[in-house]
Length: 409
Ligand code: MN
Image (cartoon, helix red, strand yellow):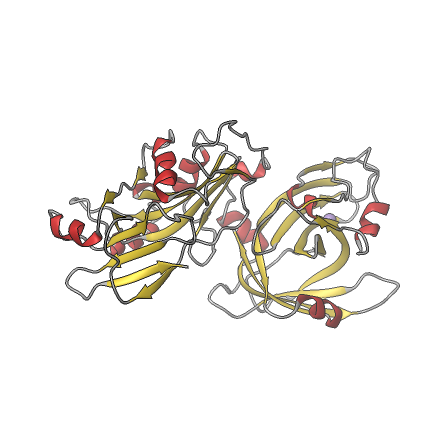
């Protein structure tokens, strides 16, 4: 894998200011790129510094380092708030997971805790934006979502640059909601505060084709494309398609993410689901499934799901897992779907709200015909070949409507 260079950037300033034998903050290093995320990360660290006082360090991953700003008042969701953000030295990527105490006498002495984390997406060329002094981007975090702008207001070679951090006008803008109210109203999962644990790795591959790999920080869900005709013949399995919210469930040590199809992390919105996942007896996990509300007749109800979430009753919901991408250090994307489902079914996790979505061999049409009650949807994926997560095909049938096909891209 390619080496990731941390030299040649403003990381030298980070290194010069710190005694790494005295502080537990990470030293810059060259390392193999084990992070396979498709989107760069962002992190906000609440820094109670003895000398500089309380501030929020806002960091965006770019080019192998963390671009960093110190935001005195913390971020706000109110577009009317212009938060002064002092541009500071680049930090190494490892700094994103640093939490704890910086010893007295060291640069930034005080305490650091994660205040928000997730991924960011530049809306314009970020390199040019940094030169020009204007960065427009989207955040997908636990507390912060949607568009933000960082705009440079002062450029002085002798002093640190002053920028403004401003929330953009979008559906996540919220008048009067600042860092303090976000902190009060959206608690981070308690486990996240304890930091990430090293994943334990089982020695034996769980299935043919499994490869040792760290858990990807971001995994796109298999998405659907429409096709015209139904496939026939062997190589297909059928499942009930529930009417709920598709979720990618990620457990990485103590860290839990519940990612929607848009990549939003809903773990803060669904504390009961988050807790159920956090307590699973596996170190690392990435599974695909559907969060549903079941009626008395066991048919999933989308209005019921929305009502439960609105009322804060996510403990009343069920999560049906239908695919497994990663477990305990093994990446299963190259395994066949049937192998992935076998490993998924064999995990010691099926209790409470967690349910395994079983499949039936054969064609979806037959399953629909033989079903004792009308199915909302039936879903099929090619089984033996090639089976790769993200590359196999998915078929969706709507009863009493023309058959529609979806292929996974
Ligand atoms: Mn700081």
